[in-house]
Image (cartoon, rainbow, N blue to C red):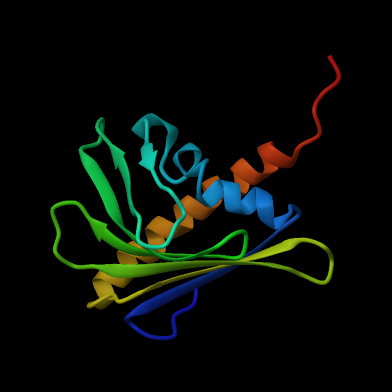
Length: 147
């Protein structure tokens, strides 16, 4: 994760998967990896500009939501981001591009943090989320076993 300034964090990852697979991860399959499995995460998200979304865990008593600001399947998803019970709103941007090897490069930016501590908390959180995304992509792109 980049340490450029206090307000924005950035992360880049490369996946041996097509953009459509990564788009599905960030839209229809977000609940499968964004938080740990024990959270029993629920998601309501339609990747259409102006639609509201919500990601929550009743078991953990937490949630985040906002509005889709930009959606260009399978290239770009931009969301406002507000934790339930908090006033601060930030912005998450996910970009997906093919790279020279035929893989997909994921670029994540989360901007609008108002303190170094808020940014540091999100650096740690997104680090864990992206590790789970790595595992989800590996499972999603693994060849089916012969049975």
